[in-house]
Image (cartoon, rainbow, N blue to C red; front, side, top):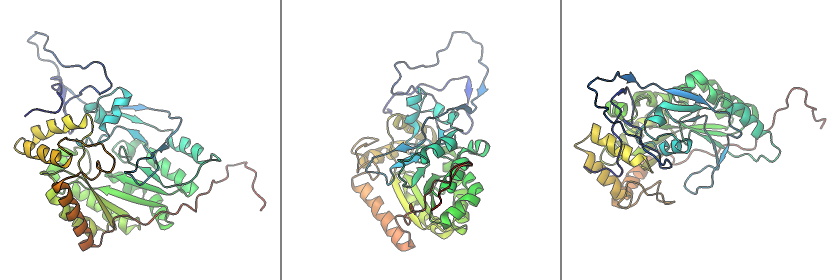
Length: 364
């Protein structure tokens, strides 16, 4: 089958283990592309296992402002760039192109950590002109990806938000979120925190291939259960739903999440912007060649004949008969299970700037 864009073949000297992408296609901003070429010598190259590399970034600002009408938040924070989970469909992959890196293997193996994020966040919250609104974390890359267990940047961010009584919404599929229950539970009790857990499939084998370093589906259901038991409001995110591959699981995902304690749910059909389209097409051809034509055809049916439709009001929902049917199934399941479409609003009135040691205290 023909792909939307040509991908370079994988390097013969690289051995991949639990990776979503199989190559490093050049980013859309790069003037040159690289491809392996045999040198003519009949000497086998020594294979090397592709390992995760981590670079450090010292940001001047960590709060990103957003004005998109498609998302319910106006500010977000990302402790990391790139994501080791390696989800092949991830819409955030093209963001690595702004760093001169590939949306393919680079996105999941060449990560950028921002250890100064908690300190910079505190500086931004202390500014006189700051106006509070819920801070969304995990909207681009997962704040609880495997690297977080060692770096603990997300934990530092939560400690700052707790000290300032600042509301926060978190989206994750990383089990390390349970480590921070000691912070999240009291914040949630005060109306300052809620968590969205992404569940794309209940098929462990499919998840292992599609999201190679993310927790298994049973682990994510357990995350919902433990967060809910601790009093943290949880929204299950059945996203992305991939027509012809995972969409038949929608009702089962919502049912299992509700049994585990989820209070609300959301759903979004898969979208494949920029470099993600050829990466996903390559993956589906390698892992499910018998389904590739059907899956890609159904995605096009939901995206106006393309693999991605970037238009506002369309990119999150899709269009056409299949998209409408998926939305109807979602609405009926939520009604049957008693799942809300949104969680209660967080409390912005508690925000306050704590005094630093040596600050002059107010008398009145």
